[in-house]
Image 1 (cartoon, rainbow, N blue to C red):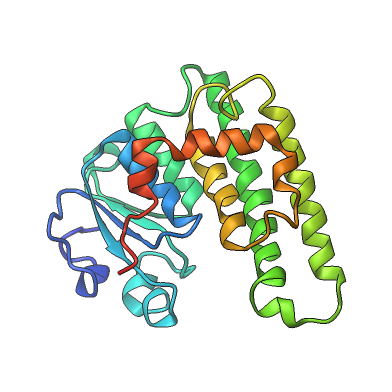
Image 2 (image 1 turned 135 degrees about the vertical axis):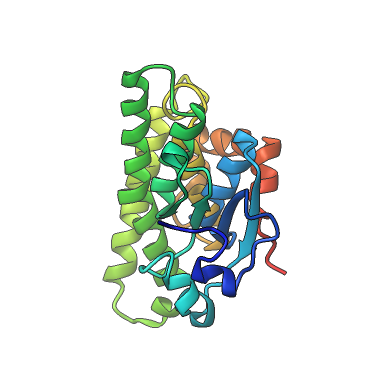
Amino acid sequence: MLDTYSHPIMNRWPAQFPDRIQLYSFPTPNGVKASIMLEETGLPYEAHKVSLSDTDVKSAEFLSLNPNNKIPAIIDPNGPDGEPIGLFESGAILLYLAEKTGKFIGQTKADKHRITQWLMFQMGGIGPMFGQLGYFHKFAGSEIEDPRPRERYVTEAKRLLNVLNQQLEGQHWIAGDYSIADMAIAPWLRGLGFYEAKELVGWEDHANVVAYLDRFLERPAVQKGLVTPARD
């Protein structure tokens, strides 16, 4: 059984409050999903900065919780049936915290499935495609002379933005009420600014998406979650 007091990750990131949810993360679009959800629910938690360097994410201590060496990950000392549980993958964490609290997952089973489909839309579409766009536009991939990879991800990013823009017509949030789907999608939209790709994908042509991100960023829990854990 997982023991929050003696788990190997505690050797590198000791818990000051081991009776609280332990968050291991960094403020990237994926990382802030978990911190925003924790802020929105009001669950007691303790945040630990796990940088993206190999010395952190590929350390034996972090791999003992997440063998896939990606942030975020959590340990909940009060998991299902009162037993501790460790989880990785941002979408799985959002679903877990939503089910734990009964918040941001809709009022009915049908609501839950509609929200989950948009969560999967982010996990399988927006995240991977926007991430590759960033790589080929801003980072090392920008040095590749062949224009086809960059063009592929620009085209796909535009398509995904159009899907969102249509879905948001006449409504404030992606699946009706504010939900974990929004906490998954909106940070990646914000990431287009970090990638310096807004003009490239025609950001201003998607008025519903622009207003949607503005609404999201106005939420106090979002503002706190976006800087948790602190980079410095």
